[in-house]
Image (cartoon, rainbow, N blue to C red; front, top):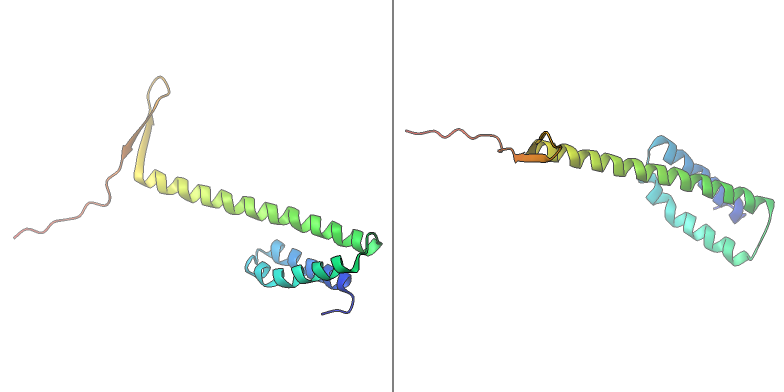
Length: 115
């Protein structure tokens, strides 16, 4: 770890951003403990304002926006997969008044062999 915890956190935030942009979400779990540790060390320093902290705060906000976008993307994929599963299990139609009617689809028909 760098002797300057603010600089070390800044470097770690750059790694986090890179993982987010490249879609390497599994790397985030590996980076989280060190990030928490560095934030704790910085909090213990009781430094209220500095150009370095302002720069780090901007990177934290940038990464949070990327994390939010990644989470929204994951939710969208999960919703889409759920919808596709539902479509495979049910056939829906709408009548003239706009009312939806759903019909459950049978699973794949099984052939029965008789002697």
